[in-house]
Length: 457
Ligand SMILES: [Mg+2]
Image (cartoon, rainbow, N blue to C red; front, side, top):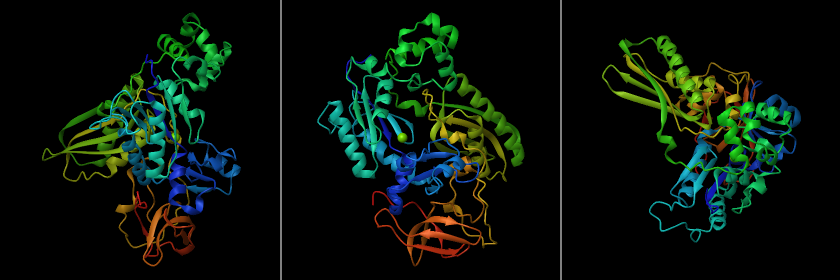
């Protein structure tokens, strides 16, 4: 165990919704819900204004709409989130040479490891709370987003601390006080305790982390098994020596298969792929790992090897989600000349159990697609493999709420809503004030999908 509070946990506040409010001035200060907008969609993230109405992550969009009908319901724009995330991760690497990104909006860093090529943290050396304050200020200056930062002597304590004063929080847990800080908290604060484990422990009268810390292996091991029982007892006593690990992303779990003859039949490839996905996920689960990146590998008749990948916002071990990512990648593959080898792998592994909100998003959105017999517009700039994996492919010419668009006369804007015959666009961007709303025919050739607004602007 460290004697110094040198582990930081950085967590962006209401990340997807905050990026939407930044890029769409008319939504600032208003409830915003990001997720699957169709009938079976699930909330991925919502703004604090929406939380005031009881909207929560992982809630069905139907229930969210009942609680907060006047919120803006937007499809995710992963390109914009990935861009913001990479700016934030670069800030973190200016402070530490050891940054462990655990999801698109969350990372640990180790202040005992100086940043590469720098004499030391720019925040005046090694003072953890000064470094945390510098990080928060830089993140806000470069992205206009807020982060909550927890500082402690272990990952567990840093993560719990980052949650204590959200949003825009900064909490330092002084070494020696960890167990006291944890004791009054619900056992749900500990990683690995979900509703089922909570119910089992509560049946034994164990409700708080303090209760758990005072119990013993004789009680816990029969209830939870040896490794979970001893592991949780250690965590409850604030004993956590898990290191911050940066090279996790290099590790992967994969499976591949070489065919006797080159395969051109996509359905056959699909069948093989599904079997391999099952094997990969079973290994992940057996090793208690979760993964963020799904990789499809192919070798063609000319022995050239190709890889395509999709990175999820949060780690997962859900076979349905891995399968959907892999199939989306396979869909984009041209097998006409024959595939000699097919492989699927997952990377970006973590050992931390994460609430995997997006994995709960069920099949494709069932927004009624208003599909005109539109000319074959170039769709290449409008598809995102991650969006397709999570929500299913977007039918031709369906405008997603929140999507970035551009019009030659009105400039850049976003899809405010669309119906059977018209699409309504609000023309504004991060650097403008709230902008005007205009409607167009669904197939208006002047209205084009666009990249997210450039950032930093
Ligand atoms: Mg967050």
